[in-house]
Length: 240
Length: 240
DNA sequence: TAGTGGTCTAGACCACCCC
DNA sequence: GGGTGGTCTAGACCACTAA
Image (cartoon, rainbow over all chains, first blue to last red; front, side):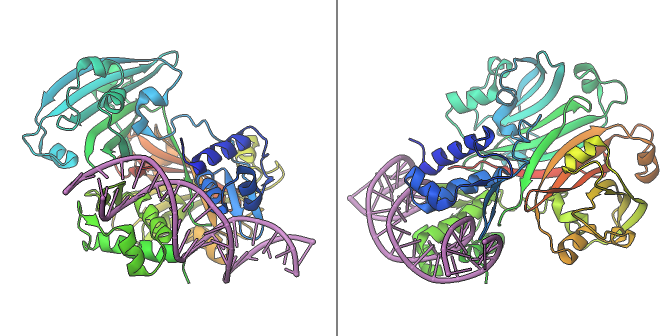
């Protein structure tokens, strides 16, 4: 049983996306909604808070709650929730993972520091070429996992979805990620696996992914040829 | 008079950053905090919600609230809150703005659609080279403003801070932004104003910035030489 | 002045962790 | 079983907008 505010926010989001609450229009006030859903006004407000951080509505004291006409911008191409994993992110599309390297080794000083582990605590080093079918989209991922946190990882998992193994088989939850996006010149790997021409720029997303308890378990660099991928995000001002 | 939950979250954040609540430690439970600050537990929780979305703490039902050891990662280089404007973002550093072009013109079809204006509603077109002093950091900005929303913009404002004009003089507030980050090959402008070598990749941030009422007022592309700038961000999973 | 959203309370119940 | 955080309530007061 989900929380009430979650169910209500899901319902209101649906009404906006389905056009029952059209863009630019006022939606019912919080008192009406609390009567309709038979909850307290606080619970309605909490539901609206979620919709607001998603950029769908705009509230003004004394006036009401409006549907923003930008509410339907959604379905962004590379919407950056990378900790969902590429497999989930590209849902509906089939992904082929070509495992180029799968090793277990000791981290160098920098990597040990990033993953907050000791120098004698091993890490998995995995390089994969991911191919999104029917899309001509190729991605090159250099990934390290702390073996102490993600035990039993195998090349078989790497061929499918590592995140599925971590979440379903190991029962771990992700807490968030720290990311750096940058452009780079292509290297030999990129030429080979991304079909880069000699001077084609590369877009790299470097990330550290954390478990819910704050422990970093993954460090990765995901490289894309400049003309195949971009990252989009929505930033909503808090307050109001 | 700020809201209580805001004051409390500011105070708790300070305690974490100052080390009064050390990394990895448990902070006082919500009942203790509500007694200390003389507010209800709901208000304490709302304050902690803010700190949690900032990635400083981790809460576990039945167990308590911990300071994450990643809490001090802050001070990221190009932390992506671009709607603050470069001037504010680079606070402490002096910025020189070299106005390359300042025009008012009619938008083409695509731009009119992006800014949600009519084809006969004029826009300011501004190209600026921004130079962060002592940093050798150069940025090339191509910007369009809807003239109907940002009246009275002048070349003088462009030499200083346009955002300051919008916020202080016009009294407008920003609601958020939609961004796309991508890599690109350098063009003639980049060679000239970013000191790009012939094949140096460029990192471009394309953004649409909205006012609080959801109206888009700015479309811009900010270009940086690949080795001078990266964008970092923190993504925290909701829930828990 | 009526109606809106923002904040806050005091208390309640629940799910969960740890002892 | 005792303590934690998550949710929810019913009502209150306030700030603001609009008529």
